[in-house]
Image (cartoon, rainbow, N blue to C red; front, side):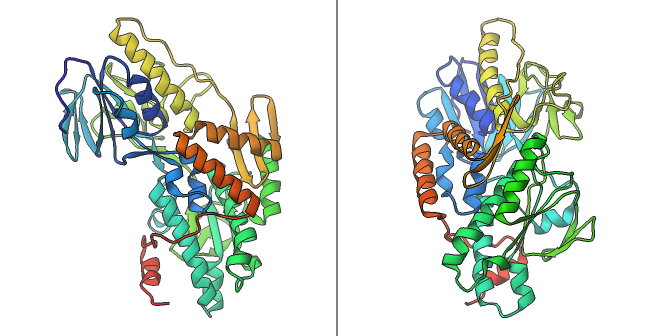
Length: 435
């Protein structure tokens, strides 16, 4: 790995998401050697991935180079690598570019899409956890619109213009709202040979309402906003099968579609090598104590989505969203310094800052303790909060002015097919056709 030997304590961080990046930022000027490892050379601001997938933002406006964090210190390093396993006896990690010993190891690998054992969905559907996946969705949406303009087969055209999203949590709600605005504002102008009413958007949810993690008031408002945009909502509906063309559910509902997006849940992304007893089997997350130490280890920590810290208020662990990850990363930096100074560790206490989701232009819902509201003010608050937490001044400026342009012109600024989607056989065949 070409990391120089040092007499300083070596802290290795696996993962440059919200948790790992916030920990790294706090350790940069400290008296440690820090090594940050990630499979990408950038941090992804995942709450805005849906805007990349629906042409609202360019991809690099929500990506931040991780080397910008480490370049300010001679004792901080970044390595582009994938971690294969951990040897806890030798205090060593093994990666695709070599091995590295550690004094303290922090696992911040985050989460991955949970298909709940549904292999047909995993093989044929789309999901959105990374920038390449968001770009694939953007390409697929635009390619299907292009193909719909030229096909003379009525059933094929209907399938191309049917959009099915599974999971009505914040991601599913925001994504379906953004696709609805694409249909309402862009399709009539860019695709005059498509009647926008032909484009159907279906949002499926296995539970009894949209936004199950939020309040009933937020759910009611979001449902009203989505219906106003023309999204068809199907609750108590679970997908049993998707073969690339036909969606089968636990009800009588069957939908033909070539745009099927899965956003129904996430699960932890652990690394091989730790004791099986340290992992919560149901959630695939590491069991950690109040200091974020992985159960059974003193010098191995887990933070963010991958960490399951059970408490009275969170019997299943903290929610797998950005705020717990950010707060745990900052708190662990303080505890690592306390450890090196011989001081006792301080327990982590999560401060819930609330939940929010946007449904589209001038429409959002917010839950902050006893304050639950929706509409234009909630939408403004959503924008301010996301701009504040977006990493990098350039990204904030670029996103802000793109939002202004989109708002004033009812436009989507990035509706280009720069990388044709070739993720499955049917789309590969389409991309290879001469049109």
